[in-house]
Each structure stands twice: as structure tokens, then as C-alpha cells.
Image (cartoon, rainbow over all chains, first blue to last red; front, top):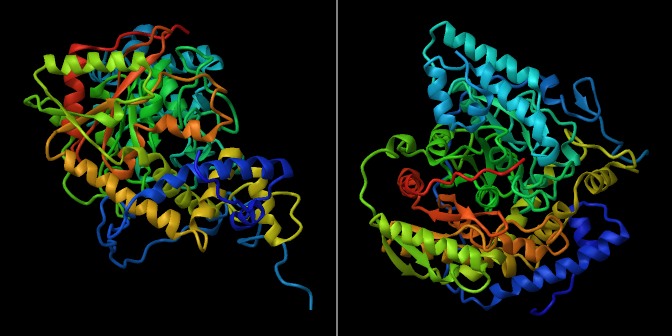
Length: 98
Length: 490
């Protein structure tokens, strides 16, 4: 196994917006360090001047005609919402009381 | 009129279509036979997450009524097709085998679903998979384990394990899976069925739940090359709703399949035949090579020198794309919402913490790492550059050969539980299939025999972009001479 990079699991869980238990943090922290060690193989490759590839067949982004369509009725868009009221998704309050 | 249920289960989809056309059976008879089979064996196989028999039979009756009314029908009208639970069909579940989508019902039908319905095909249940298609054994499903029909202690492969197991266990004549790094071909090899990952862009991704958007493709799984070609033709074609959909001409594969063709040159990449291959897989591959020589094909050793970089390259690109794609599961609009959330931001943390399983968490976190400030160039950008090198290896090889022949997997199906706690060893199960997704090429897995323990072994043919017809012809040449007729005992 190659060099094991440092993993700040709390920071990563924050970036990923995932709540982890202490057991999960311990397990994933160690597994991620192993996986990142496994990725080190790529650092040995000379990639000077090689174009990064984002897609198998790179073409210009195609544009559709700008044609008006029929939007979904709100009820359809909200059919899977965990909480809704008056055609809106209900979420916990996001602003502090003045 | 009447076909024995046993003959229905044994027939290829193609032959069932012919029998329907000749009036030798009905869609109701066919669907009933497969529903009875699911009832009889799925408690042991575990391929289905859900199935609604009444809905299936009512669609079957509608097909029979169309036929009785003398309507012009597609040759496949009235045949059932199993669907991996990652493909949207309005009103059906779309769990992706995840708790976070446990209650979700598709509010629309995607392009592949529309094409199936337009061809008169009947969606037949929702098939088990690794959560969000992340895994190689279907053990990452939040809901159930799927056993390999050949030996239930062994994994069916993944992530389309339910789609492969259901076809192998004759619970449906064919099915759809999706393949991001081998998720059709590896389970096809483990379960002894034929599976095709189409060229990137051939099949629309509109209505396929996104895992890694530059790699994902829906593809067919079945019992014969002819069936797989027919189902591919149903689902192929340009879609303005998918910006990466191929807008060029496509030759129907099932037409090309039966055109005369000269045996071409098959390349054997030496990097795929080295250390780490199970001796029985090697022996079977040697027989496949001999078979192709006997059919007049020229065999040529080639090199794909960047092969050993494919697995790390893939896991950087796929996890980066996944961390972005899966940010939509936020507990707000259409997913599981945690009861524990203290405020709006905590809602994200808690809902995702409760809703995602271990492998999904690992990959989303890993993806966040490789995209994070300070690491982006060292991991993500570098992986994209190595991806170019891997693709160029194939382009170079295709100047010398028509298709590439490899094992699909280094070993036959491993045991359930054997790799689940060792992510790197699980990732290496896809070592022979991953490069094909990185390069965007079509890949076909075909069964070629059984190991001494009675587990299927598969080989892979890799083709040139959009040359599925030629690739399937090469597969058919082998299948016609060496049909895989073994059946699992259930």
C-alpha cells in the first residue's frame, strides 16, 4: 500500500451534508484513507499536455428550439414532497426571528 | 391455442413474439406463466423489489385486445420485460434500492419507458440492485439480498443483480439494467445470461436516475444475442431531452445481426490475461479463443497499456459525479425527510444520514473530497486526463482489430459477504469492465460455460463506437456454434 493521505472526516461529512455516527466516522475515515492511497497510482503518470476528458464523445452542447411547453401542474411536481401546503413545499424556518 | 407454461419459460423472447404472432399463445398466458414463476421461486432468488400482478395482467389483456382487433403491432407487443428499479415509468416505484426514495413514485415516464410502452412491451416488476447502482454484488440494496440462481450463497453480481438473476431464473424473458462501470456485464457473467452495455449516447438517459452521468447507460439483458439485439433496437435513438444523446444515424442491430459478414480480427489485450485471473476463467477463455479461430477469426495480441489505471480513474470520476448528482436528495422536495432535524440545514444532514446506506455515503464523501478545493487538480482533473489516455489506448487498438475479446470478470461469482467490508477488493471485481465505460464503448458479455462448482463464466467483446450490430454478429457467431444451454436448479 502506498502513502495514506490525511482524511478530515468531519470536514468531508460537512461538505457532503451527511450526518455520520461516531462508528461511521471511524470506519469511513480509515477506509477513505485506504482508497485515497490506492488512488496515488495516478500521481505517477505523466499527464503533461493531455486534455482532460469530460465525456466520451465531446460535442458542442446542443440547443433546442425555444418553444413554449405546458408546465406540470403543481400537484404533479409536489406528488412526492414530504410536506406541502398551498402548492408550496413546507420546510423548517430558515430566517431568525427579528 | 395454448402453450404449456414450461415451454413459455424456456422460450426466448424472440420465439415468444413469434408464437404470439401466430396465435399459438396470448400475452395473458405468457405473463401468467412468468408471474407464477416469480411466485414459485422469488422467495429463494430475491430478484424483485416489487411487482403488481394485476397491473401486468391488465396490460396483457390490453395487448391481446389490440391483437384481436387486428391492429398493426410491433413484433414484441405483449411481452413482459423486467425493469431495474432505476428507470422511471409513471406511477411505478423508483426506489433505486434506497431508503431515501422508499416512498417515491415516478411522476413521469422517461424516454426508455416511453419506447417500451410504444412497442407494446409490458413493464414486469421492479428489480433489485445496489443502492443507486453503486456496487458489484447487489448487497448494497437497502431492502433485500438477491441470491445467484446457480448457488444462493453466491452474489448475482451488481449493480443490476436483480435484472440478471430474474432472467437466469426464468422469472422474465429479458430485462433492462444500467451500466456505469460493468453493472450489466458483470452480473450477466455471474448469472449466465447475455448483457450489453451500449455505446455512450445510443440510449437516452432521460428517466434514468443519475449516478455518474458521463458513464451511465441503460442496456438489455437476455438469454440470447438475438433477444438482446431486439431489445436494444427498442430503446435506442436520439432524444432531445438528453443533451448527450447521439444524434447521428443508427443501424438497427437486429437487422445487421443476420447480414452476411466476414470473420474479422479479435484483439486479446495482454493486460487482461495476466495475474489475478482464476485458472478456470482462463481455461474457458482459451476455449472461446479456439472457437473463434475455428470460425475463421484472426486472433491478435494487443496492448492497452493504461489498463491498471482504470479502476482508480473510474472511482475518482464516478464518485465526483455521484457527489454532485446525489446532492438533489435533500429531504426537501421528494425524498425521505428526517423527523429529527433541528433546523433547515440540519434537515439535509439528518435526512441524508438516515436515507443513504454505507456505500453511497462512502462514495458521496469520497466525491466531495476529490472535488474539494486544493485536491481538484490532483485527483479529478488528473483522472480526466488519464481517462483520455485510456480512451486513446482503445482508439489505437481499433486500428488493428475489429473487436476486443476479454474475460468479463477475473473470477466466477464470489460469495455473499466475501467482499462487502473491503471496498477496494469489491472495486477490483469490475477491473475488466470499467475501461469500456471510461472510453464510452459498447461491451457485450456472453456466457461460455460453468466452473467446476457450477457457477457461470462469461467473456466480453468490446466494440467500436455505435458498432453494436457488428459486435452482436460476433457474439452470435459464437453462440450459434456454442449455445449456453445449462439451467440453474431452483
